[in-house]
Structure formats: C-alpha cells, structure tokens
Length: 118
Image (cartoon, rainbow, N blue to C red; front, side, top):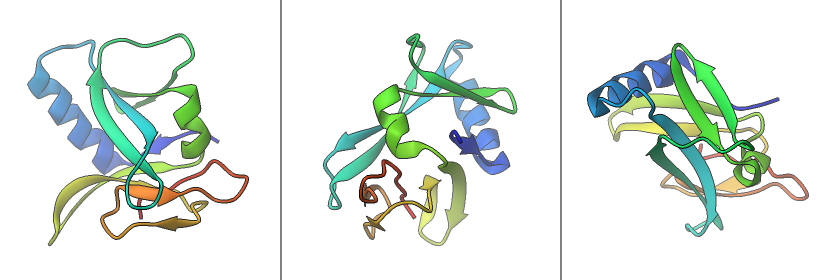
C-alpha cells in the first residue's frame, strides 16, 4: 500500500502549484529526525524526481516520496484540513505508535516504519 491524497489535499495542492507557475513542480514529502516525538514530516516543492522516488498522482497533481521516507509513510493519507486552528496539510497513518500535539512529528510503531501526524 502506498501514499494516498484526499480530494481536498489534491485540490489545495493544485492551487499552490498553479501559483508557482512552474508545470514541472511536484510536492515532495519527506521524513527526517527531530521534532518532539522523534521524527518529523517535511514538505517542499521539487522539480527534480529521482529514479527511486515514488510518484503518486491524484487529480493532476504529483507527490514525490524518497525510498527512506516511504518506509515511514506506507499506507498514509495526506489530507488538507481547515478548522479553528487554521489550515494545513495533515498526514494520517493508523500505524504510528504516537504523535505530538502539534501534529508535525511522530514516533514510529515498533519494527514498523509507519507514521502519523494525527
């Protein structure tokens, strides 16, 4: 199972990419060490796709994930949420052992490699 995007995330990402005025841009999602729970999510625009990257396409937008980060993101869902706390991309993965209150870092499940921001 790979990474998926909700319709809301695809729509918002499409608007953001259109504002950048570069048809080659894609959203890169990555996992790095840090954050209050041990690992944290990162998002950046990238117009370079490595041969090993997973490329997920949804409603005309593309998301890239490197192989190491994919180990933590398998089965995750990227959503875009607007609520009283503001608006943000949220990564949901039921296999995370724990997450932080801010929603941007996580502790992976034992022996797993899955993660979640909420």
